[in-house]
Length: 91
Image 1 (spheres, helix red, strand yellow):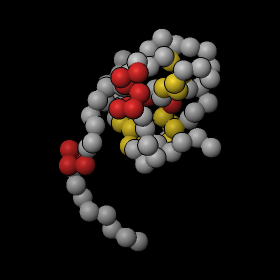
Image 2 (tube, rainbow, N blue to C red):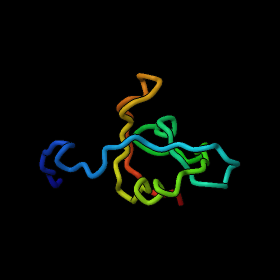
Image 3 (tube, rainbow, N blue to C red):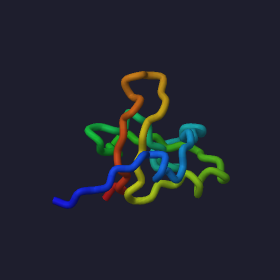
Image 4 (tube, rainbow, N blue to C red):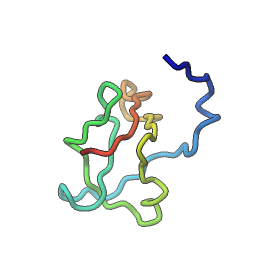
């Protein structure tokens, strides 16, 4: 098995930002927005993703790409902080 080098998150971090949220829309309209509750067992569950109206200025900057690591850094529930997953688009 190949060993991976150890590094700090700070050394590989591209964006440390809060998420963005907008007005909630009907399913399938607007932009899908992941929440901490959509992370389970280090994987994303897209079944109950919220669809929201995201400001145009945020769309490209916050768009996830395959392999992005998502980490919950704050939440109204302390048990959600630290939840993480690697982003793979749904099939």
